[in-house]
Length: 329
Ligand code: ATP
Ligand code: MG
Image 1 (cartoon, protein in one colour):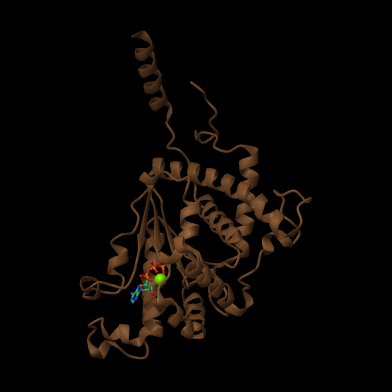
Image 2: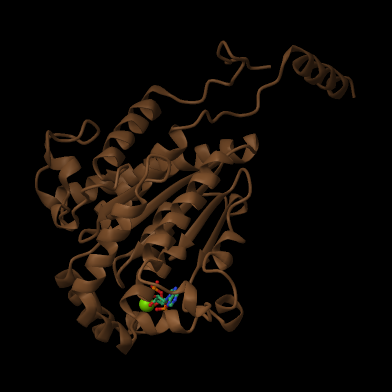
């Protein structure tokens, strides 16, 4: 039996290259992570930032590469390696069946949520992962508390759950369009000016509760600029294969851009915490967005003690027994 176990009896999991990648991923994740909401200013976050590469370079990318195009090509490989590491981490998460990971994605239209989810999760075992998209709520959903439709779909132990939009819409689109709140059938006396702060408080409590129960919570705001959104909308209109992604209402929603930015900022201020941080991911360059998202998920999984379930001496003896029986056949 191969026995590359460490002192605790765990299988030795990572090569040196892997460990370097994980370290670099964690550094990249930290750069864009907001763990303390107080004083958060969205205007300080540039949607076109590719800073993790520019400031002092990047240990895993050759210095010979200059310019955005070179970086873009090089990061493709880096993303592939990141996905390979992620898929191994997911395998351990699943085997261990203790922790779960909840990933929440929020963004303006065309910021690249779908693409990021698709690329980053491409190497992941579908059995260990679920993706849920939350659109305008149904009549049944409106007849429940605002978190109900999401909380019932939270990931089981060992699983990665992805929310493509989430209960955060309740402090975003519902705040920008107050008429949606009126549809929620809340008792009148409960709808006061304090409602957004109350929702923030409830969300913080829920996420702390999840963390205390073994769910790692990570939240992504894909920060696209208004200009880049315009470009992407035009692409969707001009490319027949992308027409389906476009709806006329999306353009009308741009009129509320500043208001959206204000509520996003307030949301991050009010709900970025140590145990459920927001990542403000620059989203004007898709290749960079995907890399930061992958890095942040690697960071999240690296923050807990992930390993394949280990066997004690008695368990190993049983294995040896079983092996002997099989060999004797
Ligand atoms: P996406 O825009 O995420 O790529 P999509 O365009 O396919 O997806 P839409 O049909 O636009 O999906 O559904 C998402 C819309 O539903 C968004 O405009 C969002 O603001 C809205 N929505 C989500 N949750 C709520 C909610 N709780 N109340 C009202 N509207 C909501
Ligand atoms: Mg949409």
